[in-house]
Length: 89
Image 1 (tube, rainbow, N blue to C red):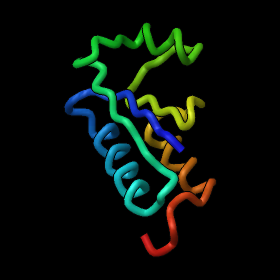
Image 2: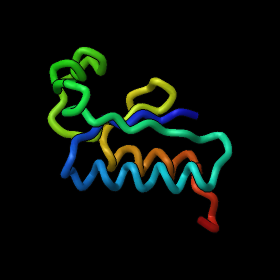
Image 3: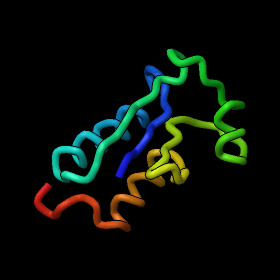
């Protein structure tokens, strides 16, 4: 399972998404993630809108196995719904 996080510096929800992904990576052998700094990479919200197919108002924008999940709140809920985090973590 590969998660890609599109975020920007100074974004608290981007930080939380990275922290949750780091915990998942430690807890699971089948999880990996990549964080992409949209400022560093020159990616605009318009670029993300083309990929996602709907307006992008906020970051992070998170994809799991190339499926758009949403922002941090949706990603956190996805992790809970899919029971990806072991109970002890």
